[in-house]
Image 1 (cartoon, rainbow, N blue to C red):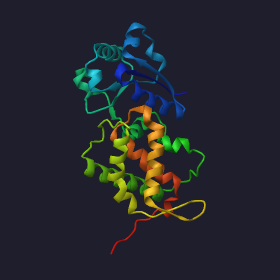
Image 2 (cartoon, rainbow, N blue to C red):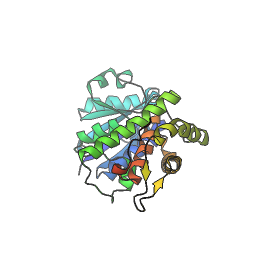
Image 3 (tube, rainbow, N blue to C red):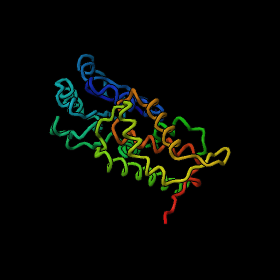
Image 4 (cartoon, rainbow, N blue to C red):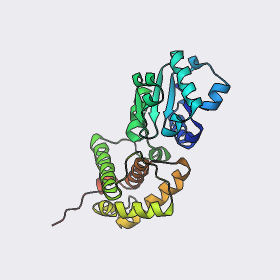
Length: 248
């Protein structure tokens, strides 16, 4: 079994919890250790395929995390970095410039899982793993386009960056609804069981409710919220039935 140890500064525990869950759901053995614990109770890194360092502005201010990074670098163990925000690994230790890093986003997770020889599935897909899995290239491309369309509408309206923290409050949900309504309405939705049309406002409302309920404790970034919303909508309806509406 593939195995990973994640080192993180204590303030990043929530984000690491999500990452640990994703890795475990993909059959990867994971141990997550705060920097304080890692220095107080050292472990042998040789039993892990990969050490993953969680990089953030909070981690940069944490002296124990800097010491943890130093210990990993000096051990010669294969290491990677995942960036919770816009902080670059080299700002914590210049030697981290030489290791590969990933964004804390669906694209970043995809690259990380590829390194671990595993295909990344977002949480909404993992929760619905019993659905049809014979997706062809066209379906995959259409989903990517749908996700991109929602993100573009959201970022243009709100000015949010991909890695901006996005607490799942009621006011944020209202703001997200306003930002996505137009883009979601430009598609047609059909219930996969009854073939009955479904109003786009209901589609969006139900998807956001699910995202807010399922990720509220995970301190997501803006890109996670939008990608999770797109996945939630997409997985409730047949892709062949979600077609772009033409306007005169």
